[in-house]
Length: 246
Image (cartoon, rainbow, N blue to C red):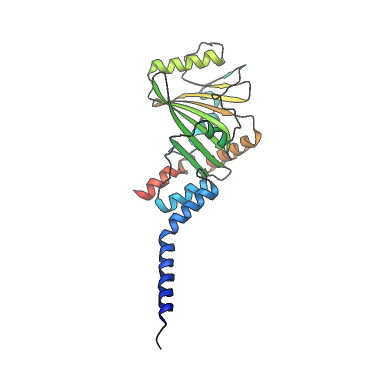
């Protein structure tokens, strides 16, 4: 019995549609995640990496996040700690500001991190600028879309620049207290902390807000989990991506 021509045509069209759906499914899935969950969401970035093998954005940090809060959890005997009668602030952005509020102030970050950790969703926005004729990078860290930590980094700064930055910070927060240390902590009057740390390769000045107890608890849980697992056992998204691609 001869099969009617329209059935053959219909079968061919359906087969073509199925092939096209399979072929373009990754594109549809990526676009769906982007517009439903948001272009800076961890879900969108995870879906993008699933099909392309890489993040759609540059990385702000290439190691694990735990390394970026470790200096606040180290034993205080390894560096000097000071008390300031001034509030410690990170530029003009108030702690607790939403991700959207910060992004609205500067819509051209050079890097974005967004991933789901065990205890919270972490996002990071990074921007380039200059200070003392030296390239500086500014990073804004968010837990569940709330700004809680800022960081300035200078790559290979000259000794004179290091001393100048430290001097300005001591003048602003410690009434010009005399101290030659390139590794110290300042506790602000507003429950925020400033960590000045020279690693020998770069200078990092971090500003951590400690006024939000919910965020404090999440950070403590994250840190304690990292310690139990062993920090060396933790791998970053960047390391995982390279591992899969190399």
